Image: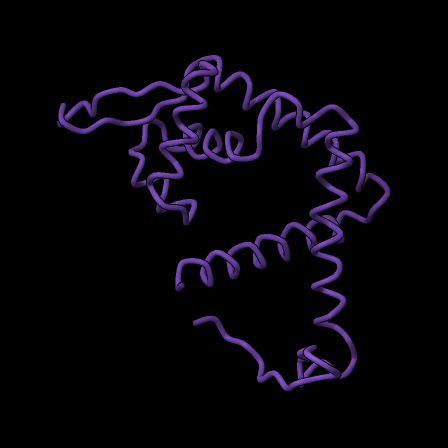
Length: 166
């Protein structure tokens, strides 16, 4: 179970965090929801998300870093079940982004590897996304950019730990 502050009934069926007197947690919740919506919309409007879906981008991130990887290892790394990864790999394989290969030491084991096309699509997408976020935060002091990167990394790590504990 993830760490949760004690909740008390509010007005009607609403549940209000007890320890959020200054509204910080509520602002975090609201801003994360807005961030997800605005980031997706802005990337789409900039034409950046058109060629790689988020799931393909995340899988290709892992494959570009680690090389050929089993479906189970991909599922573990992303906190998903193997059947979900298998469906994503099937779609990516049909698009020519990944291929299934035999494990070099154990021919019974099948690995997923990025194809040249997949690595190229990933590199292009990552570069476009990086340019986009560089432009969005260009006027920010460098320390603010580093702080945002550090805090988003921390938030994602903690969210991942909670997801894995369930």
